[in-house]
Length: 251
Image 1: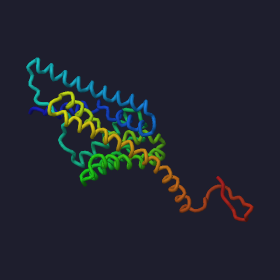
Image 2: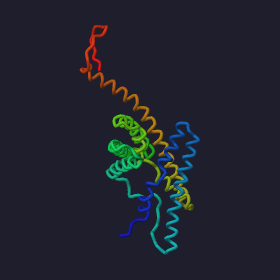
Image 3: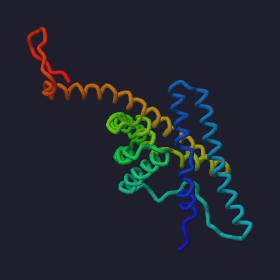
Image 4: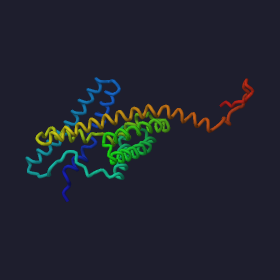
């Protein structure tokens, strides 16, 4: 059975795509680091251009040798089934964290964060809000959850947030857009649309995860205060009388 060339290429280059660098560039721009943002954008474009050059070079060699590999449609996929998307997102997020030397105790929480966020992304996208709003809501959820998960498992919040957001990155859209632009002809307009989609998704991810992190901090403080109120007075430690006449416990 002959494999689809487009699916084979997509599956093999997906880990080389510059989605995380592009989103980092957008985040730097939103937080005021414009020079760093410009450098990261150039880095992402050069990395994607290198992938395009490598794929086209391999196809050219195959043509010279007389090998018919079929037609290449950049960025083609088999669809987005919710169950497959959730499981794949959880596995890819945990694998990315492991590849970046994250502590092993954080791998399962990262997978548990990425899976539901991807499911929420898929549900919002199917309701008609579009990919950009779906990405923003998924990133906002990751930002809120990552702060609490990081404190629970004693890892920096950035480790959880960046790893969990990997399945939502627009790297494949960047590759498809630049490939169509490089090919020229009738695909130029499609390439521009793909690049604009990638940019809007990157902005949505960056602008979604930042407010999520800021919102999680006061929520965590209020949660601790509520827990202490519900728990009542401490029942451990030596008892000492206070000046007000009421006793208090100290550790």
